[in-house]
Image (tube, rainbow, N blue to C red; front, side):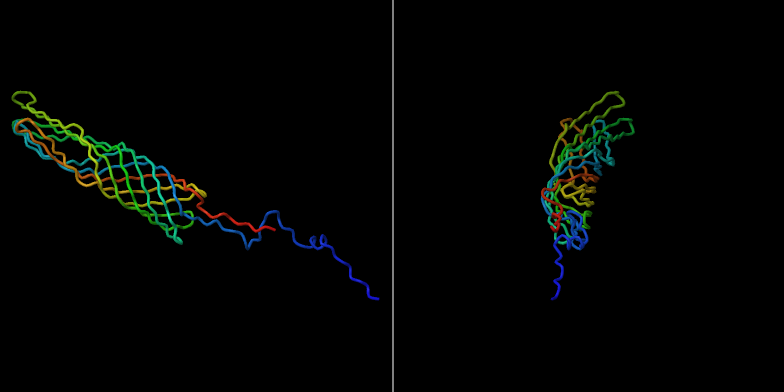
Length: 264
């Protein structure tokens, strides 16, 4: 009579299998963390800005002093603010739209002088400053995982104030015989801006960035009304600006899909 083969119970069979670490998935199913830049975000930025506010003034005084001189110094200051935007990722390409607003401390005051053969002279003091600026820009970049180089450009808007004071003296009398002042005048300028930078995803929601921007707000005339006879001064400047900023963003939702682990 044949002898029945011994029955191997489940525990014995399980002991012969290689042990799996608790919660571990086979290496072939390990999920890689893939960054996805799609979504809405908000953030802040701060940096340094300097304007190439070049221009020229012409002047004439009751003493007969006539002069013309160029403005060559740049307004400089800190720029800081907040931004909000949306990105959408197509494969590795990322496109989006971003709006920003910045407070600034940009200001510059300079003095222009003129004189004649009689030692009569005139002094013109000119000031330009900006207190707030904003932009609406389209962004486009190519994502290398967490690293996103991008270019951006669009509409720029800024508030600018100008002020100019003219005083002249008569050498024979030793007195100022002409004085005119234009108080601080504010105007809003609309222009364009372009630039680029890099952004790095720190984790699933936070990213940091650095960027350069050039903005052009066009030409601004400075022609005050002067009541004093024979006293004339007028000029203008071209308002363009360079800025370097660093910032951070918080993206709502996930920058990366949830990692799936097989259950055993």
